[in-house]
Length: 293
Ligand code: GUN
View 1 (cartoon, rainbow, N blue to C red):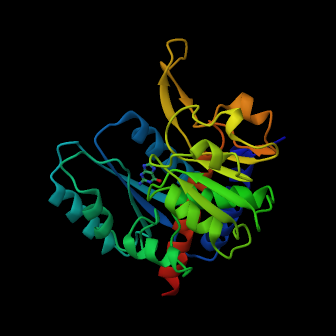
View 2 (cartoon, rainbow, N blue to C red):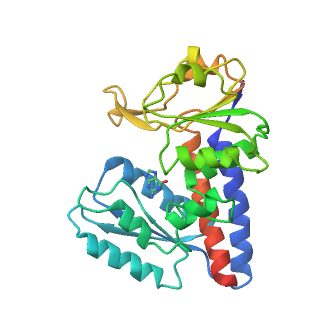
């Protein structure tokens, strides 16, 4: 069994980004600049955004963290995004989701310039992805593709089962795996909450991507021997014995599934780290398009 280690694979991606950034700086160019917007103080969102900012620093990018309290009016947030759209020194903009109920996520996403949409959530980028045109790929599916590439997991002609159909993970993941790409060309089945025979379908997967947000959902009896298992789950589960009072749990029952799998991502230390690598790649891509264009 191969452990698809996010620490190892993300370190390799980050090292190449760091070297590219060092060359830019040595040539007198400015560094890529990511602006992250955080609304409120949801614990998980705080952690993710802090990690994104820290990783920018590690590869030599500039980052700006812009915070609003959870009561902020939608118009204030939209105006801030417009300001960042018009600021030539900003290459990438991300607004951490989820947002408070009174703010329309769709409006926020559609206000971000598609050229700075390093999360790849804007409908223009989502549409381009579907048509196989160059676009920003949402960071988690992008990170998973980078993981498959790093470990040279063969995907052509394989049956991939994606559990979950969110705009952030499941849907773009299904498109990438079915696309004519070096680590694509799969036959893809998407399962969701209305799939009656999910266990049966999952059992047919040569590759299983679990992205439904239910801790330990994928059990050994649902996977075939030799499958490649990608666990996207990152649910905080209360655990009094843990220092922080919770543990991060994936969507896969790791021990029992690992015993059958050819390769599997751990949680934590798997896909989460690759998401950051995907975001950094997108930010560098936005920067390159901006200085060329
Ligand atoms: N919330 C959960 N995942 C993500 C992500 O990839 N980007 C943003 N902006 N918010 C998220």
